[in-house]
Length: 130
Image 1 (cartoon, rainbow, N blue to C red):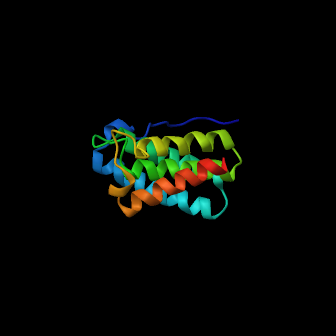
Image 2: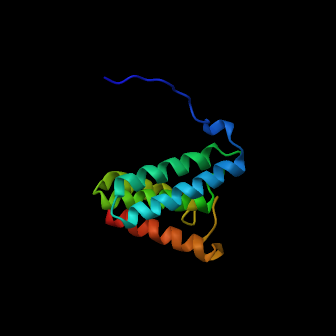
Image 3: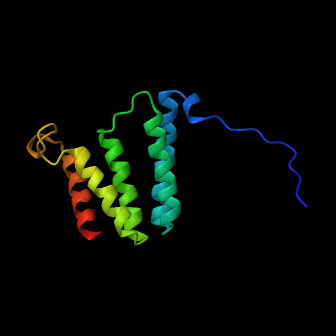
C-alpha cells in the first residue's frame, strides 16, 4: 500500500522569467539530442515538445524565430524515426510555413542566413520523406 506523505507542485512555467525559460528550453533540447542519439525517439520528442513549450511561454516568444523552427524540425525528425508519417509531415509543413518559403510576407531564400536555409532545407526534405 502506498501513502502520499507530501506533495508540492514545482514552479509553473508562467512563473519563470524569460531568461530562465530559455535556459530551461536549451537544457531540455540538449537532453532531447542525447535521447535521440540513443535511439529513444519518443522520449526525445517529449523533451523537444516541452522545450518548445518553454519557448512559447517566454515573454520574448517569436513564432518565426529560427530557434522555434529548429525545435519543430527536431520534433519532425523524431516523428519520422517513430514512423508517425502524418505528424512528421504536419510539423515539417509548419516549419516551411514559418520560414515563409519565399511567400510575400516572409524572407526570400536569397536573403536568408545559412542556418535559416539549412533549417528550411531539412524541413522540405523531411516533409518529402513523410
